[in-house]
Structures are given as C-alpha cells and as structure tokens.
Amino acid sequence: MTAVAQRPEPPIAVPPTASGRPVAYSRRVPGWWRDLVGVLTWGSMLVVVALWVGGGNLQDLSGWGTGLTAAGRLTGLVASDLLLIQVLLMARIPVVERVYGQDELARRHRLVGFWSFNLMWAHIVVVTLGYALQARTNLLAEAWDLVVDYPGILLAVAGALLLVVVTVTSIRKARRRLRYESWHLLHLYAYLGVGLALPHQLWAGQEFMSSTLSAVYWWTLWAAAAGAVLVWRLILPLYRTVTHRLRVVDVVRENDEVVSIVMTGRRLDRLPVAAGQFFVWRFLDGPGWTRGHPYSLSAAPTQDTLRITVKDLGDASRGLSHVRPGNRVAIEGPYGRLHDGVRVRRKVLLLAGGIGVTPLRGLLESLPREVGDVTLVYRASHEHDLVLRSEIEALAHARGARVFYAIGPRVADRHSWLPQAAADLSDVDALRQLVPGVTDHDVYLCGADGWMDAAERAVLAAGVPRDAIHLERFTW
Ligand SMILES: Cc1cc2nc3c(=O)[nH]c(=O)nc-3n(C[C@H](O)[C@H](O)[C@H](O)COP(=O)(O)OP(=O)(O)OC[C@H]3O[C@@H](n4cnc5c(N)ncnc54)[C@H](O)[C@@H]3O)c2cc1C
Image 1 (cartoon, rainbow, N blue to C red):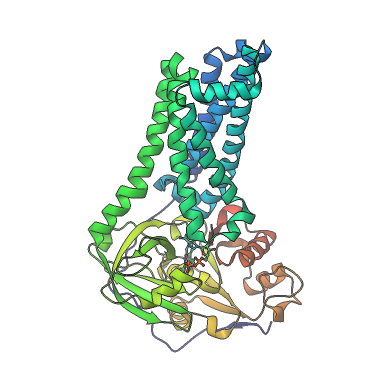
Image 2 (image 1 turned 135 degrees about the vertical axis):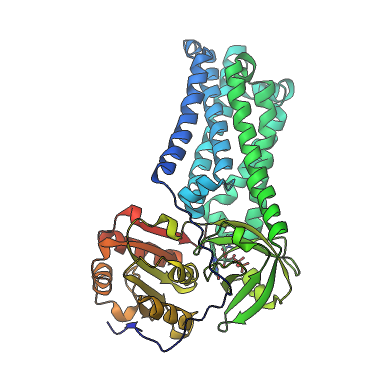
C-alpha cells in the first residue's frame, strides 16, 4: 500500500516540548459506574411514575376530563425529570463525564432534550384539554384562564417559549446555519427556561402540594441540578484557574496552520489530568477571552507544563497564533475519555486523523511501559499536514512503537478511512494488514467526524469489541 508508509527508526532524540516530571494521574473508570448512571437515570423516571400513582392519579383516569388532566400531569412530570437530567448530563459531574465523555454526553443530552421537549408540549396540550373538558369550556378560553388565573403559569409559558427557541436552534439544519458562539449563547437561555418552569410546579402542581415525599423528591432533584451546575461549571473552574495561575510560556509555529502553546502554572502536579484529556481554554489577555474553546493536551502533562496544539479552523483558533508568552489562561476541565484509564487490554492501536493526532501524541508518550505493541496510524491529506511528526517518531523510537502514515486525498467513491491510493483494499483488510491481531488491541480514535465514523466501522468490523474502542470527537 504505497500511501501508507512506516517510519521505524528515526535518528532523533525524544523531544519533550514540555519540561519537568510527567504527572501520572490515574483516571481509571470502573465498569459499574456506567451501570450506576444508567440505573439512576431510569430509576428517577420510575420514581416519578410511582409518585404519580401514589398521588391517586390512576383513579382519575376513569373520566375523560380528569383522566386527561392526570395524564397531562404525568407527561409534565416526566418532562421536568428529563429536563433536569439534561441539565445534570451537561453539569460536568466528574463521574458522569468520565463514564461517557463529552461528545457522548452531548449526544445523550440532545436525545433526552427532544423527548423532554415533546413531553412538555404534550403536557401543555393535554392538561389544557382536560381542564377545558372539566370546566365545559373551549380550549382557547381555558388556556387563557390557566395563564391569567393560575400561579406561575405565565412564567412557565415564558420558559416554554425559551425552550422552543433553544430546541429549534438545536435542530441540525438550523444549527449549521448559526455560528457556534451564537448557538451556544442561545442555548444558555435553556437554564432560564428551566428556572421559569419551576414556580408553576411549586405553586400549582398537585404533586408538590399533596405529598411530602413528592415535594422532597422534586426539591432534591432541583437542588442537585442547580448545585451541580454551580459547583462543577462555575466554582471548580474558577478555583482551578485561580489556584494554578496558568500563563503562556511559549508559542511554537508547527506549520502555516498550526501552533503549539506551552503553558506553565503553580502546583500543576495537583491538577487531576491525564495525557489525552482536554480543557476548555480561555486566553484572558486578548479579544474573545469570554469564549472558551476545547483543545486537547498534545503532550503528556508534567508537574510544570501543559501544551496544546491548535489548527486554524476559525476565528478563535486563528487568534491563538497571536497569543504571547505571559498571557494568562483560564481553564475548565480536565475532561475527556481518551486516556489510559479506560484501557482494557495490553496492546494499543492509536488511530489519528489530521489534527486529531493531538491527544494521541500525548497518549503515545504516557502509556505505561508494560503496554506492548503500540501502533499509531496517522491519516493526513498531505505530508506537510503531519504535525508533531518528529516528536511522534522520536517517541515511537524510544518506546518501540510502530508508526504508519496514511497520506493522500480521500477515497472518491466510498466513505473510507483510507487514502485514495489504498482504495483497492477494503477498510477492514487494510486495518488487519497494518495491525495483525487488531482484535487484541484497545483502539483510541480521534479525527474529523466522517473519517472517525469510517474508521470506527472498520475497527468494529475487524472484530474489536465496543468496550475496547475509545473515541473523542472534536465537534459536539
Ligand atoms: C474535545 C475537543 C478537543 C479538541 N481538541 C483540539 C485540538 O487539540 N486541536 C485543535 O486544533 N482543535 C481541537 N478541537 C477543535 C476546536 O475546539 C475547534 O476547532 C475550535 O473551537 C474552533 O473554534 P473557532 O472559533 O476557531 O472556529 P469556528 O468556525 O467558530 O468553529 C468551527 C467548529 O468548531 C466547533 N466549535 C467551535 N467552538 C467550539 C466550542 N467552544 N466548543 C466545542 N466546539 C466548538 C464547532 O463545531 C464549529 O462548527 C477540539 C474540539 C473538541 C470538542
């Protein structure tokens, strides 16, 4: 396969761009954590249904008016529960984040969000219909009555409208038309929407008023969601930023489009970060500091340095080439599942596409010595796009790892992880040729979305079980 070249023994010394002793922070993720998170999520919905049944709602199902009201109440309660689960999913709770990773969390958040949104509308329509039937009035008159006479309903309507804006702008077609920053800003209105929905549940919700157990459950859930956001999205990042006082010490141009930024700070050995993870970074001494952007560590973290390597893909990433030594940096994180703690086998295959090589370069450096048979396959369109190449080769040489490059344009007539020059091979055959016994490997994957999908399909088809495949997407 001409497009895939191996570079076995480069005459280069290991070039640690970072200095100091590497930090070996264990981020092992016990398998049962995932089960626990799942059980708690489904369990919360069971509790909601049980509380609804305990509240005597089943008896109401005997009549049309009362039945619709009771059914509408249930959809509203489940919608609220899902709304709060959505908030919890994105609250950066360490256990949850470590189990799923942020790309998977964002996907689940989206799925739960659409269910919650649909149930919220079912709640609004069905409850109004139920009340109208009981009051023997028409739907519009009843809706008006509810808004003006019932406490908290007007606020809830405002909240629902905000959630409509958030949901509509999150539909893929609409989202693609918006700048990420505009979409994200709009998305933050969801918190306001959730907050505005609370009073009607407190003041008009039968569940809150009639049962202490129910009130305790809902208060606990609301407090947990608000507390989690406060602690993990605000207080902890602020604490880490203030404690570690990161500053830029070096900016290295890797090629026309890519820069590496090395930062130093205080007591970095106490930062619970592992190679392969990422932070959301804010470079404080320049324009755009209010907007955080996620970048992976491109070298293993040490007790006094962190490094990222950034490709110019838009305004913010381009702006990083203007960052200067001395610039202060705020951090949120560390996050991400591309680290040694998720590994379940001894052998490792690192599959990198383009700038997705950054976390895998860090991993290559930090995998424990007992990890045998490390292979890195690095896919790029052109040879000059192979960033951090000399470092990778030196590290591979020092560790006895194998490196293959898959260079060239995409295969024209199918979605493939291979370059056009290797199109005569199937995706799976190419993988098996490069990495004999690939099924015995843990596979770490990072790159552009379409490429990752093709590579993941090939890895699965080659027989690697899902729990041995670890991926991080650069788009959420
Ligand atoms: C977990 C993770 C790790 C990443 N690691 C690296 C890395 O090591 N090196 C690197 O070059 N790039 C990395 N990226 C991609 C990088 O974050 C985006 O390229 C960058 O944020 C683009 O911002 P922009 O303003 O330059 O471009 P824009 O034109 O504004 O955005 C381009 C695309 O980047 C994504 N994006 C923009 N801002 C954000 C944000 N705040 N959060 C999430 N996605 C955003 C959106 O999908 C958007 O469509 C990573 C992304 C993620 C999610």
